[in-house]
Image 1 (cartoon, helix red, strand yellow):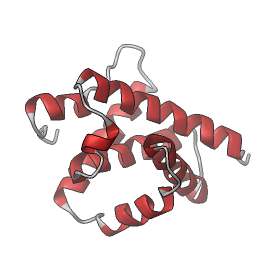
Image 2 (cartoon, rainbow, N blue to C red):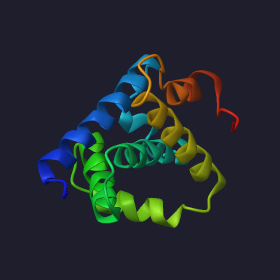
Image 3 (cartoon, helix red, strand yellow):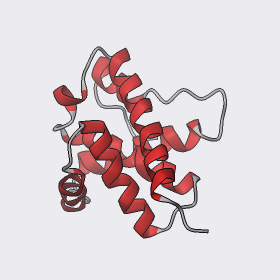
Image 4 (tube, one colour):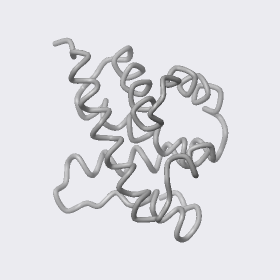
Length: 131
């Protein structure tokens, strides 16, 4: 079954709200932190996890990540952010941030008790260790 553009936007907004909540708990804004590699990668991992949960195909995944970045940044450069993520795939900070974002939100959508707080903790305590 194909996913509609409205469904993609709805899932992207869900991810954005989760990210923004974590940032507000850390007393940060998207504009303050987005251009650091680890937080940027965390966002990528969040959107990637949501596409997996909703069983989206590759094209839908890239579209959701693009729309998610646009929603998060309130601007229309989501494609530029997706290209940036593609270039950073082998960067250690990117790999770690992406893994934490993916793990946090994969667990969050399947468990009513899990709290995805790695990003908030990043700003409070520094970069978390890999599990």
